[in-house]
Each structure stands twice: as structure tokens, then as C-alpha cells.
Length: 428
Image 1: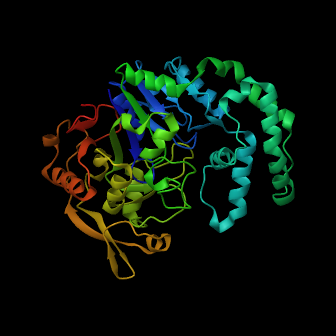
Image 2: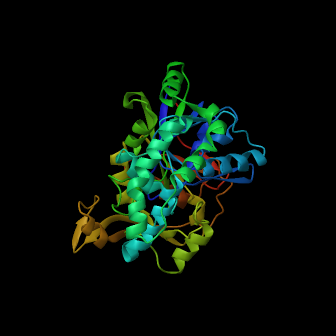
Image 3: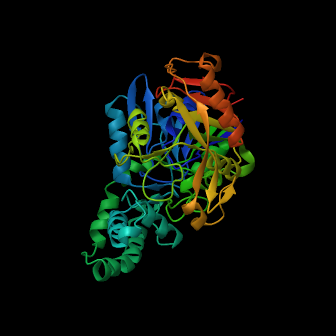
């Protein structure tokens, strides 16, 4: 049975949570393979809005086993706050499983994240300040603390001491902050140990056994392709690999077991934080897209930067991830616009680029080359088949499909689970 990867194709906030939730009605396991509580999902079920930051979106489907994979960095305080929020609203989190190999976000990671951003000044990346980058730095530097470590106080203390030996020097001598106490940090971790213990398991074994048994597993990537630390708009990226390859590493599921790679892409483009954005709008239309689309970050509340659909980015994401399908979201936001521009290529210092420029400098200088398509006035939120869409909306979708290098299998026409048009099944 299939292992399916769900990946954002732009700079995040494309609607991955809704897609995973829709799939969750027909799958058995939903896994978060990377990121932390910096990668929020908004899911609307029966008119109820849920904002998820660390938990997989599939947790809202009663027959799904939600899994936090080994590639995630887990803030335990944030995890239990989110669990309590869901349970207070009647959702069950009893089936949640967490990898023993997932790394933990410590309070000192959040401190370092914030002071480093301030120290960078104009060169700040625009992080959420949640400590995600420093936690991944410790993981790569072999100074990280994993979920399994909090069940052995001796090992936990050794690791905290080793990590703080360096960090306290930075905090005190470079950033003029007080040092972090080892005992306080160890106690902070230990307070979660017994509550966490029943959730922790070998998730790689769990998921591979599930596939052997014919179960369907969905891997739900956080952030998006253009924020990938290798393939995104570096250095304005996250600290993990939210592209499709990262799902393999972050779950312990081998690449030969993946059947579908589904890209989630908006009918326009947004991004949060600093960094280049060729189609960004600075006029009233940018404000219109922001307000009509509700473009505010789930985690931070920051307004998202808005721009037109970028087919160069779409083609690049298709290539990097090997997409089998696209899910096009928020098509309804474009209703009422007379003429809709689509970026089909870039102009970089007088040279046309139909594909992503090689260098960061060229991408910073890229200017969009637009083609224009007639809009539609009709409300499409009630459409449930492709033929229900106005003719111009159909033509717009088909043109995006042609330009983007992958078929548009599902079209979102509203925020609710039911407001989707399925042209091709993501599971068959």
C-alpha cells in the first residue's frame, strides 16, 4: 500500500494541513517528518478552525495514528499545550506516537534564536524565534538532546552540561546575557518525562510494519520547498529539508516505498519573513489578496507577503520533489479579479530565465515576466466538480497545469474539508 509524501511547493502556508486532513479520512498513519512548532497548519472541520503547530494535521481524523518522526525538533512545553488545546475541544490525542530519536528544543535554544536575530540586525533571517534553528545546529553538531535522553537523568545531565559549556560562553561574553543553569534545565526536561513516556516508540519500525500490513502512510512535510536548507532561497530558509527527500530521512521509511509525492501550491503566492520574492505585490492588490485570503501566520500572526502565481517556482518544485500530483489551493480567493497575471519566466538583467536562476544574486535581481488571463466574477466556493467552475476559472487551472510541470489533481475552493474538487485521486 502507498506511502505518500505531501510537500509545500512555494514558501509555506499553501494549505498542506487541509490536504493532509482530507487524505486522513482514508489513510491509517500521518507522519510529521521535519520542522518543529514553527510550522503551523490551519485545518477547518465542520466549520471549526484548528491551528496546529507541532502535531500532524491527521490527528483530527479519528481513525488515523498521528506520528512525530525522528526528523522533528520537539518543544515539549508546546507539545503538551497543543495536546491540551485539542482535548479541551473534544479531539482525542491518545493515538499519538513520537520517535525516540527526535531531538528536543530546550529553553536555551529559544534564547539563542532571539538574541542571534537581534545581533544580525539588517541581515536577520526572520525566524519565528522558537529555537528551531539552534536545535538543528546542535543536532548537526552532535550536541543535541533526544526524546529518549529524558528517561535517563544521568545521560540527560551529561548532554545538557556539554551543550551549555559552549553556549554559556556565547550568552555571557558575546550577547551580554546571563548564563543558563544546568540543574534548572535538567529539571525543565524531567517534568515532562512520565507524561511523554507512553507516546515514545521506534516510529521507523512502526511505520514500516504498517506498510507491510497494507496500511496507508502519509508524510506531511512542514514549511515548503523554497524554505529547504539545500534547495530553497538560502539563507532565507528553515534549518531542515522540507522537500520530498527530507521525508525519507525524517521518518525512516525507505525511498522505494513512496508511491506518490503531492505538491501543495496556492493559486497565488505568499511568503513570511525576509528573502527574495519576485512576484511580490506592494499595491492595493497585495493588500486585497492578504485580507481576502486571510494571509496571516498561524504561529506568529505576522501578515504574509502576497504575490501572483509563479510558474518558475512551480516547475522548480516539481523537479526537485518529483511531484506526481499538485493540489491547487485558494482558487476562490481570485474570484472577482478582472485579469490575473501569472509569472511564466524571469528577466534577469535583460536575460530571460524560464527556469530557476543558478545563483542567489540572479534570483534577487529576477523580475517577473507575466502572461495575463481573464478572471471570473462567480462565487466558486460551492463548486464540487471541475465542470461546476466558471469557464475562465477552468482555463486558469488548465494553464497553471501546463506551466507547472505536473497535473492539478485537487482544487481547493474554500477552507473547509469538503470544499475541494477532486480531478484525480491521490490514493489510487
